Image 1: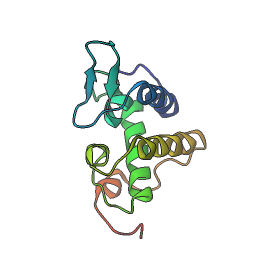
Image 2 (image 1 turned 90 degrees about the horizontal axis):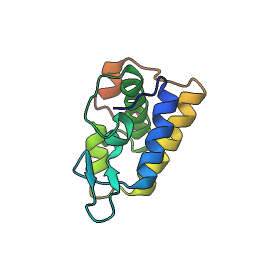
Image 3 (image 1 turned 180 degrees about the vertical axis):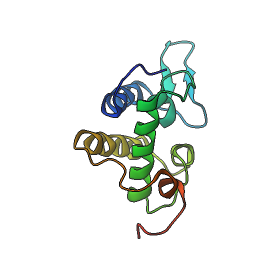
Length: 125
């Protein structure tokens, strides 16, 4: 679990986790030979355990989801679907995280309600 107290800190720690190793289809996986643990995008946000109760992590995930919807025109309905999509690359994930960090740092947090953020719409086109 992430111990970070702010969404900005959560996102920065998450980006560092992703730089150590990114994976698809699993929250995290450790390479037995190297000992390196790779994480998916949500695993990077919430930490290596799947405890999704930290309020700062929840807000960070919401910011990431909003950025995903904006950058990909509402194509993905969840962080997992974006992360695990065959066409998603580490560069895509890094761009989302960096944009989310800027948004969190500048106070440009969610402008919509939580329901609107997760509701699939094509309003970003």
